[in-house]
Amino acid sequence: MLSGVLFAGTYLSVNLLCLFKLCLGEDPYVYIDWRVSYSTVSPLGVQQQVIAINGHFPGPILNVTTNWNVVINVKNDLDEPLLLTWSGIQQRKNSWQDGVSGTNCPIPADWNWTYQFQVKDQIGSFFYFPSLNFHRASGGYGGITINNREVIPLPFDIPDGDITLLISDWYTKSHKGLRKDLEDGNDLGVPDGVLFNGLGPYRYNEAMVPENIAYLIVDVEPGKTYRLRVSNVGISTSLNFRIQNHNLVLIETEGSYTNQQNYTDMDIHVGQSYSFLVTMDQNASSDYYIVASPRFVNSSAWARSIGVAILHYSSSQGPPTGPLPDPPDEFDTSYSMNQARSIRWNVSASAARPNPQGSFRYGQITVTDVYVILNTPPVLIDGKWHTTLNGISYFEPLTPLKLAQQFNVPGVYKIDFPNRPMNRPSKLDTSLINGTYKGFIEIIFQNGDTTVQSYHLDGYAFFVVGMDFGVWTENSRGTYNKWDGVARCTTQVFPGAWTAILVSLDNPGIWNLRADNLNSWYLGQETYLSVVNPEINNSEVPLPMNTIYCGVLSPLQKDQSRRVKFSGSNRVFDGSRRALFALIITLVRFLIGLQC
Image (cartoon, rainbow, N blue to C red; front, side):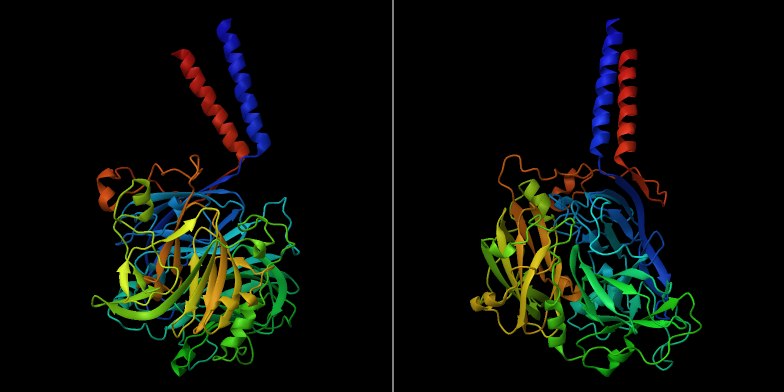
């Protein structure tokens, strides 16, 4: 009788617990298997080796919803170590999953590793890519779409379709050959073309484009409105995006809804992502050009490096007519800067918001630290070519910074990155920015190079508050936008100009601050931002159980004897199904205990 009462009481308490979980609506989980391998394709008419995911180049779109938990098991079938990074995913209190060399040991060839993170309080358009060894130059990238939860309305009518476009400069030389060129001090030169979703250009000009090149066709219906998510996933080329005779209504960039403004074209710099609404309101009897062409180049050789896709109305009777739509003046950087300044945050939109959560008054927050960061062209340091930030070229230690911090390994890094350019010879060093937890940091990027540079900060969205030509001074703050500067994770800095950002440091961890231009990044133009929560219960995600160890911590690594079977399919489990599963497991364990 007593055992029956105990069983009934336990059963009731378990059911109440599960009912409580169901009422709370636990956030769903999505489980994904990705195999990263080489594949042979011919995007520009020449066979070459690319990096594919599950056999696809580009990789699949990671399509999730705000607050979902994402579990991605990655199998590395390359001949080199691999890491994937999730550009723009903030990884709240979880830099263990960031997928860069400062936070993770690389996944060795023929190993698998499982990423697990939550897209907490985020919406918008982003992309993922491989972060090591210049891999991105050979592919391995794909789009990320984070949808609003149903309870949070969109600040525009629901589009009739959602289309991801990945644009990139492209070389037929392998990533290994390109990185060797950089190491030898050679410029990469003019790219062989510009791709749309891994495909070459439509043959708009017989003299410019060879025959038999596969090109992208975007199918649309007359009168309908589509959301186009466009990301520049290339190496180093700013690209101007436009659609013949069609208007672009900007609505979002990298997780922030923007004021809805009309553009005929948009300069999209390396690493940046934008969302546009495009209404199919033109004569539907023909197709139209979609174009991505290089910006700020001064050589006739670049004329061949134009990406062209086709916008195909369902009622179209033939191909596009006329020339490609004209780009802006290729030497007019003022046009591009004014365009960037015109992008404003939609402060009235209901959505997950960047940090500080829900803040519309970032201009009134007291700045605690100021860093002026100057980049320079490659210089020789100890006989090898390197790029620098404030005279320091990042030296990548064998032991990741985050692991060294966790295990108190001495001598791996120093937290002494200079807050101003230093009047001293350039050097190699592993020097980090010391970020004050819950501080508010101002960073001014000063471009000392002759090309547009993009900068990205992992773990955060930052407010882009100002940019101008010339040298930044204290008086430059008088030009800052202190109300609706857009919050994003990647910003451009024009040659001979500066860009200022503000960041609220409420996300503890070690976070990568880098040039998104792949050639600058590869040669050392990066550092890390260390943000330590001094509280005893600091709520930072603990060391993952599946951590890979390397460097001085290599003895902790166990052989990976078990291989994961890949189903090739995605699996989504909502809170109800997970709670039901937990109930079943609990009951089975209880019954086993009774039998014992």
